[in-house]
Length: 398
Image 1 (cartoon, one colour):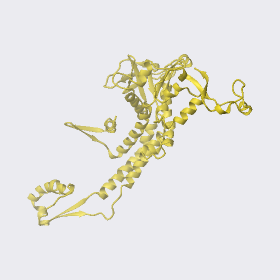
Image 2 (tube, helix red, strand yellow; image 1 turned 90 degrees about the vertical axis):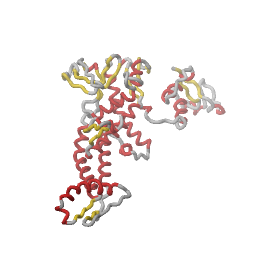
Image 3 (cartoon, helix red, strand yellow; image 1 turned 180 degrees about the horizontal axis):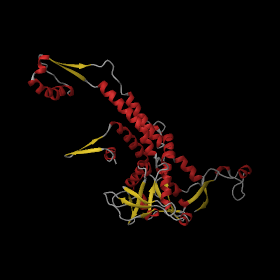
Image 4 (spheres, one colour; image 1 turned 90 degrees about the horizontal axis):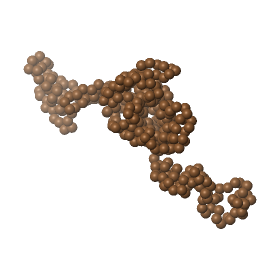
């Protein structure tokens, strides 16, 4: 969803023929732009995550995996779906509700709580889906997914803090416009002031001739006897620094509320790695954890204990170049931390599914300190220094 689609649902609009005119109050524009920027950053990050499904502690790709990662319903792909979920989590105090209908997942546009039941779980009614379809069924808490932020009042706090900034922005913009705008004096002979014919044509002169003269780069204004158009020159022009500073404060305020680094909010990123690490740790991981916990909430305790659960993997958000990672890949395989197929899957490559690619390997020059000191290798034989760094040796398999 683009920025103007984002605004379209929040501001007054009028339609003239095929043109839609959106009335955006000046004091609202910057806040909505800042919220849109912050929300988009987190939405894009979550949509790049892999939603893993586990059975008996092993990752599987079945129907649930397809719903969460490819197509939750007939009209949306997973990217659009999770954008909507995260956007509602951030912008709506009620959070994002997802209902399952006919084996498909749908984000509710609206819902209401029919009954608050602390012990048995709440009841929900009036659930409205996209397009205005209202469901008649009353849903129990365990029949829906309700995704919420850890702080549901973040939008209320932003709105409250912005009230003062909105007034400052409005005043600064008005001062800039009034001071730097072009102003003219139209001097008229005193004799013409009482001329009824002149009074009739005065508005036409202002609205057509003078307006055209002011708006065109190359224009000529013809002055008649008894008339003079004089431009008022301000002694001191006001720069737009005040507006720019307040705009930056608004972006900083929204970014701070959602734990997004200032550099990402303003687009002035110098140390990409450090900024992304902070962003993922403080802004994205908590939302990914909240989604994981909500997905698992519907599974009963025994399923979860037996290894049947969901997990949002944020490891694929960053762009990774395999050539830059080559030394690290070699170390991870050579230390028996991962097998070849595990790393290929992590890097987005197809698994080889060969016997050797699913075994753990360790290089020969890794051994116990005592054995190295005594020159002993596996089997009690003396070490041959000419071959100690040659090839990895198998240490076990899956």
